Image (cartoon, rainbow, N blue to C red):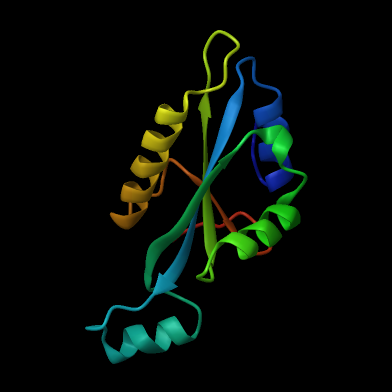
Length: 135
């Protein structure tokens, strides 16, 4: 299935044979202290910067109504604004949901991957719930 919206993601996760947990890493864009003037201009125009994880959460697909609700919930729990949320999924086994330790390990791995710029395994969404393509 081609996932081009958050709704597609929820539909795909709910259709899986094994129970899923959706993993979310919310990140903000920051500009490095040693950035050049050109980097600063691009950042102020909404481009560039480094993505820094600020919050993680996992949810079962059935716990999520829609993207707008997820975004509102994130504002209630996060103390830092976010620009992008990266999403991945982890499947359970034999009809059981993934173990909490497996979920925690996967979220830690996602966070480290995002910090190192390895984003290809995740689906990114902006604050409006649109998929993001990085150039």
